[in-house]
Length: 558
Image (cartoon, rainbow, N blue to C red; front, side, top):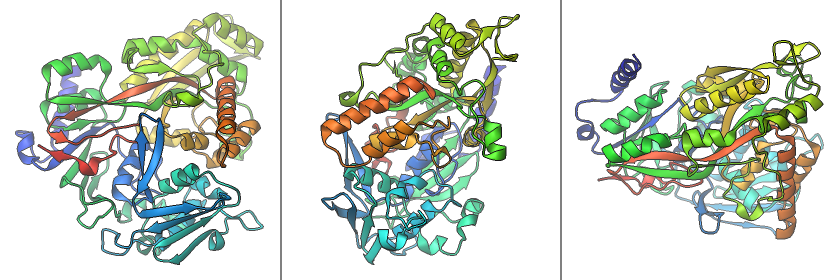
């Protein structure tokens, strides 16, 4: 029966493609990519999902092009819309000099006004951008609002001047403002900010990058074509790139093997256990691992979600508002067993904070490893007031320790982890029910604090991004889905955003890790290798810590 369902799904998906009889015949200049779920948005103002962001970088302009140096373990920034830039000695001013020949796909010039206009939209609470707080370091007015008139200057069409209310590290400026991809002012000028989100589906997607959108059929496919007007850096070398949405992993893998797909990415890519057979039966498929970019974790909601949604009242979560309980959860879960049973020890590593193993130079090695220890977990629960009830389930003040763990559909790695977690918790007297939601519903429910616990993950590739995951102002920090508040961590994050001597920066990063390690707002499970599969007919594929689609505009077909 399972095989029948898989092949029915497969044949249904074939109907979204021009033909299923001779895949490479009609795709001589067309790359098809399988993904597990639809994009949340293709508007950089609104995106939250990491794959949506990757695709937006192919469509929209950005100030620079980040480049990861694997040997140095650092990120450098290369010219893109900005051909050069400079910073003041006091760290309070940055000037970007824009290219004079860049245009939007409809032929309108890309100017500094587009950037300033877009920054005002990003900062507008009506937009509710996940990157809204990037603008908080600009000059502010007496009422605390951003002084856009004086903090973002456009002396001419090709000069962009940013002024800050405190010294800013150049790496932070480049990372944040590069991520604030602009939208076209001449398109969005007529849309009231409060309507941008609700009118997203009808708003034209007009970019300036190497690709442009030809078609977006929700829950089915996204078709990009080369943007012949782009000089950022040039039109895509392949004429068409399609993203085919197939929620079931087995369906995506079958399509890759049959040649219906040229690539399988996202949602963990290819299961490591499938590698031996795939390499034996399909030598035409190459595996490209993305290392040290993605981590899985269990988000423990630290507040009472219902009280916050109804009254904006912050009350501790009945289960996970207590640090001792969160620590107990981490001790209770056999993280290495999840790795060994699914990814294999070569493709994942246990972690205890959100920091990527790529940053070895700043790793705090003095911290305990939270080795699997059910007895210690039970001791911590007892210290937090939880005792076994008559039925063996932990209880406190007459309330059973029974909660639902949410996970995302179409992700076999997390679904496997969820079953291990459920079993581990049952063994220490905690009742954990599983709930599987479709990606967009899962994401929305997390943002609204509807889950007491959720098996979730992030692409946390850069150190500046580490600084936006957390923050006590969690309403404006969408990645802080545990609603975790910690004054000292806020102070550390603020200091790390400023120019610092290397020794001071190192001490602060050590403190950053120590706080997260002790507080466990998430049980950090592991960083894992995402094994992306590509047909060998695609040339020039480069994947790295920054992106799976890092140089998709350079891809060519044999």
